[in-house]
Length: 294
Image (cartoon, rainbow, N blue to C red; front, side):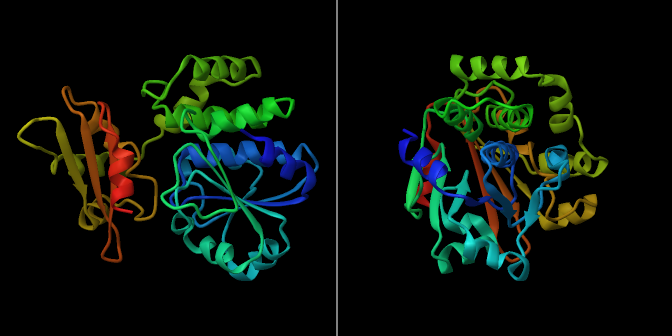
């Protein structure tokens, strides 16, 4: 499935990689893995996102390669690029300010994802719905190209897989996922070290906000649908950074409830908008629900 992508990687020299706003472990981990894959091939690579990496994932940015988009600083980079690689997003609007460069530049664009796009927006879509994560896809790409997985690549791939499988507990976890993880461990990845940085690094403010979120928790009459709300007032009262990752993981708390099939998290944004996150642990495809609402 990677034939066209591999041909472009071999032929082209200048790459820009971006992921979605409020980047998570899957987006950031696979970005850094892809960055090193291309760098090891002697390519010119820039990582430019709308948002900086959350503090939780700062360990992925030890070389300060993640850039926050600034038109004055980055327009010419996009203009001179051969390839724009969009990772882990179903639509260009999820790029934030970076979308402007995609619309206005003539750069060839590639969407690399394990979810089907709402609308095809790139010149080339490389999508594998059976993959647990973008990290798993990146690993498979490297293997198909007969490239060595370096430790820097392994760390990014492992973070991507770990976070998007819910620490290997979601239904997207397969025997292949565990085989890849085992291979990464042989390359020197320390599972608990990464787990601790990602999941055992909560701030005092996050715990306070979590309590406020749980106070809004509700069930429907079937006890199979649950939802909760994070308001701007709760965020301010808890002392959390409004744009931080402090809400990450909240929806998984609701998902852990016995008998639940679908959970929703409503997060009030500053500009009179509400972000809705959906999770399922039954047979309901919440991706179809999300796509129905655009």
